[in-house]
Image (cartoon, rainbow, N blue to C red; front, top):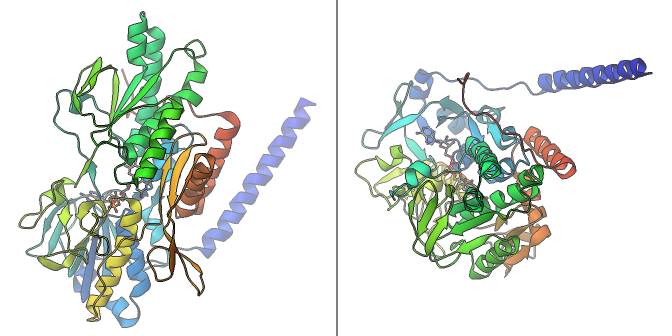
Length: 491
Ligand SMILES: Cc1cc2nc3c(=O)[nH]c(=O)nc-3n(C[C@H](O)[C@H](O)[C@H](O)COP(=O)(O)OP(=O)(O)OC[C@H]3O[C@@H](n4cnc5c(N)ncnc54)[C@H](O)[C@@H]3O)c2cc1C
């Protein structure tokens, strides 16, 4: 009986794997990468050379829009080259499910080479180490210096950790899949420490997690930690389950997520507090030791601190001489996202500092803004080539989504414009009747968050991975295995 079942399973598995291999073969023949690699000489000979530094949200969006806008002879004469130190694009908003054991790290990165399929732009895998604006040359490790006619700087940002006693040595950051796995590992270590602790005080300090930063990243981080402990990890330790754990968000500003509307900030605070997360706004962290975090509002006994307050431009951007930098090192741009003293150099996304031409508000450091700015500067470059003017840049927000773990979130949509002509509903600032913004919370916001990012990630493979991960999590719970992250053998 068992033998027959085994033979049946093996036959089914062979049929499925064989069928999948056949489909893959057919698809692979149809989707041959029609893309020619370009030599350095060919790049140098092109009559217009557009260099895009950074293949993240802003850089890839600029490359795709240039592909779309440049046509005919102009397209053949123009070389577009994207330089990135990683050959994959990281979808940062989806790091939360990775950290909470609900998704696999592969689901949140997309290979940049995949974007080249049937397109003309080129990619160089190299670390940019110097930008010489005077001589219009970019230097990258292991590559020949690259001259340019137009430059788009889209190198993103890094987390800024202030020089407070103990903070730089002890704070954990959150910006990459490795950080997401480290967060999971550290929470597992903390629970194991609580399990071994002899006194209630030690156990309580082991089970207290402080998040420095009350912006988007800080609140989502706090909710992710809470969620992973509450509906993942602690279920593996039923004897610790009754032990109260604490997640405390500490922010300097007087409200959470100061870039959101006051109503949204309030909704975020309520959602966190309903979960049992402590919120301390108007509070500054002063120092950190192995066992406590000192703040302007008292001492929190805690062994683990995460830092998510503030970003700065990467060193290569901060080090560009002879131009104006903002306080965080990013590049001050004019109302066309250009460096005022270099009209053929654009800076976009987190590496730039500019103001909305319509509202006068600072442009937000978000993926949404970086993508829009990438498309905008691509249109500006084409307009410059054709001797046309472009209107100044104004950000059209599509909404603001914040995830709060299982079944919870806050979403602000719009404003939307109702137009009398198709497509009738437009997100952004076009002419028509403007309504909204609308705010939703709880499960509808959670569903919106998942639906939006599932549709937005630009690869079917990732979408399928994510759907499978989320379904498996709903059916069987979160991943609670600790992931060894050290290379090689350990002794
Ligand atoms: C955890 C987290 C969650 C987030 N969630 C959201 C969200 O929900 N919604 C949202 O809108 N925004 C979110 N953000 C912010 C968003 O990720 C950034 O605003 C966005 O990535 C900025 O886009 P960018 O193109 O400027 O930079 P990036 O997308 O970071 O791209 C920069 C690129 O430059 C490359 N690079 C950097 N230095 C060098 C160098 N020296 N040489 C070569 N290449 C280099 C990097 O490899 C990278 O590919 C989140 C950020 C984090 C960290």
